[in-house]
Length: 157
Length: 171
Image (cartoon, rainbow over the protein chains, first blue to last red):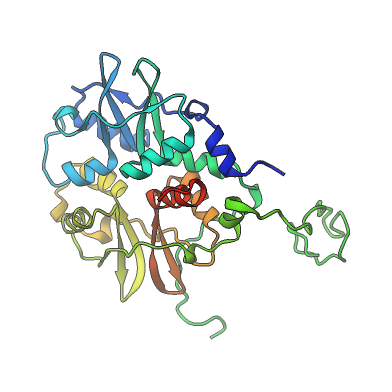
């Protein structure tokens, strides 16, 4: 029998997940470019870096909360709307610790840094769920998606 | 024993389906269902604390929907017509269908920009199914629907919190 997930989450280090290393931009990046990365590359968030340090994070949730109704020019630098100095996770921390930090802070994304505080990539809740999903038997998970349908009348009616 | 491939009803204990030859070995062995993995596969979504959704109509503007989402700190609204779920409008739709094209959110109605029909869960689905949909398809918000009735929704954040509490004993 495979190891319980409880044990796996406490043993695995953050570095063992496929962190998103390309989700990295500098503070002067215009919002329009960030929106394009969110849309076309399906990034849920970007980490904003300067001098090889994480200085901010900007997420799709921030678009909803801070920019969607504000009529900002697409040339606005991301540094004006990002969250400054986000919580980071160390590359060698246990995945369980990362989950705790994300749940406590209500974050779906956290930047991962090495021992020198240099950014390595983004850890997302989606990556964590994918990691957990990989530990289930395939049969359960390959159920087809259910599209919402309402029967207009009872079957056979 | 019914074949998982063709549905042929075989006599119990055979290793190969008599109709299509599929491997049936092991299918009748009970899976070990201990611990978190077991709860995620045999539990029910309906037993998790679901989030009460924000409901809007087909005519609601994107600006009003975004205002509601901000106030409630929700990442989605459910679009209902005659108390039937017809669509979902999420933070991703805000980005791709309102902000990126640069359209005035007051001029867009839900009917133009919602995702319809939404992918939903049934209350009897195992929580593992929600984990899979979120992980594989990147869905962050999943309405839970019982026949025509919307019971609530489940979010990625919510799933992660559930895993944290269940597996890691967090509070």
